[in-house]
Image (cartoon, rainbow, N blue to C red; front, top):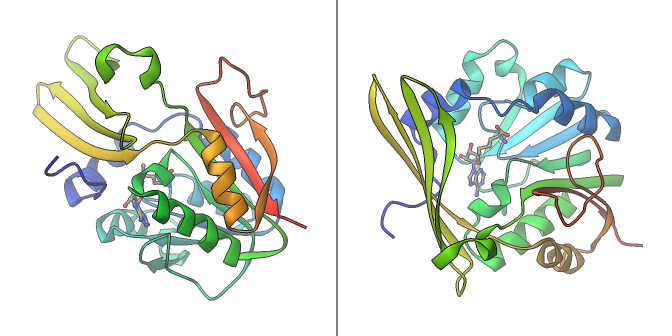
Length: 240
Ligand SMILES: C[S@@+](CC[C@H](N)C(=O)[O-])C[C@H]1O[C@@H](n2cnc3c(N)ncnc32)[C@H](O)[C@@H]1O
């Protein structure tokens, strides 16, 4: 579908930080436990990288969107983070880290299985001895939805609403999603396409990249991963 690509434009970047997810503190607490150096794939506006830096971890980033990085640079401390512009499945920083992480479903922005495998391989290339690759990804919910189409309410206030219109193709594993905002300031669309995978497919990608699953949690506070989990936080290490 035309236009449903994972580009993060100036418009998206300018409003990105208006609605934080609210799990930043627990995300940082979890990630800070793996060492003193980290690389964030798809660092965006620094939602996680900046507080993680404040926690004593030296964070570098790789990012595709100049507009998201421009927002990062405007924030206190944002100018000090070393960001390599490029595709996280291919770009390199020339350094290795205790931790490489990729949060907020962003591995799904890579739209082919090959690119997602390359992303695991790129993470493995950046790991220092003993280092780990952490991903956070929502679990596909399409199987429970009728006809592979659904609308989710994201915000519901008296003067504005936000909802998510989705259509999934189980053959290609592609989800086309449009975040719609309607308020006194007008109507805004934020379309995005994602390639969804179950955790088992990520585990195979990891194996191809020479990694193996160390831990899988249902969230950032290390809650168990169960049949009721809506996302997974998976920690991969170099296979012996
Ligand atoms: C949902 S935002 C997440 C940003 C940040 N990690 C966070 O947690 O707030 C997704 C980010 O991924 C970036 N992105 C998408 N595809 C990418 C790719 N192939 N390589 C690098 N960055 C990418 C986008 O530009 C955007 O900044």
